[in-house]
Image (tube, rainbow, N blue to C red; front, side, top):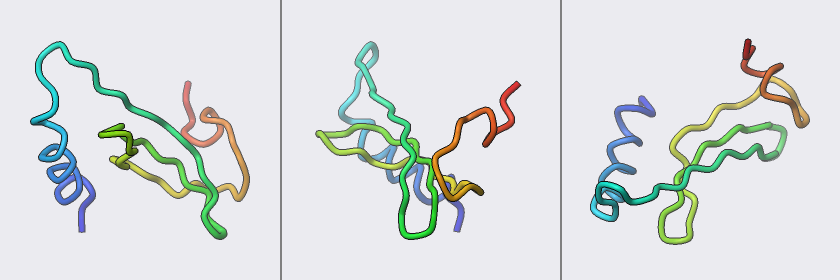
Length: 73
């Protein structure tokens, strides 16, 4: 099951009618610990809820910095 093919169209269908040209869309990033997994999440705020649009399980078991995780140059 592909995140892009399955989840993105659902999120688009939910939020597209709510936004017109020039309106503001809020995107958040977060890192959370769930059981033994360290998860990086990108979400869109919709009706006071954060809907995850992307997530990745990070290789480290504790908090990290983006440069170390994603090899940002």
